[in-house]
Image (cartoon, rainbow, N blue to C red; front, top):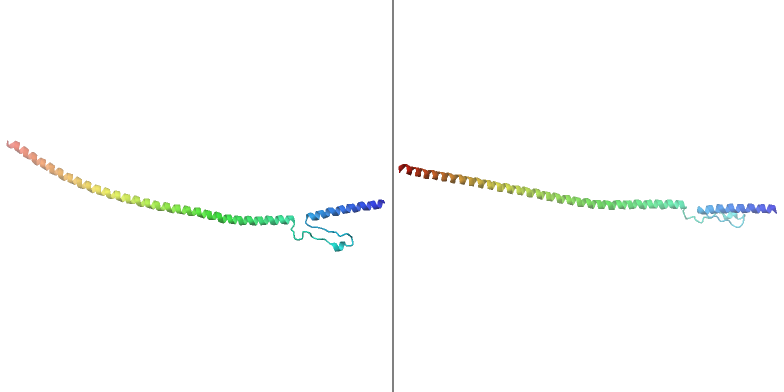
Length: 161
């Protein structure tokens, strides 16, 4: 009887070890099916329940790689979008610069025209002033001569009287 109890104890320990091994293999995705008899052990073999499935670590790696590819794609897309946005901003700045150049050219032309008009008016005023000065000089000479003549006549009258 002691021998039978020892054998039963060994069988239970062996069954416990097999159960732990089976649980460990199942966590890795391997399912072990053992047929009823030891004689059938050779024919039963190991079946793979998760033959088409990946190991969780490989699955995580594949998901991470897929995510990385999506991020690269998203980054490329963002690069294109941001370059379009930057191109629009640069185009706006270019048009602003062009507009400023046009207005500066118009202002320069306006200043040149104003300067030319002012110079022309100043020239006209100068020539008018010269003409006026000449006219005043001529008239003043005439007045002075008339005064001299009148004074000479007046002096001549007093001398003769």
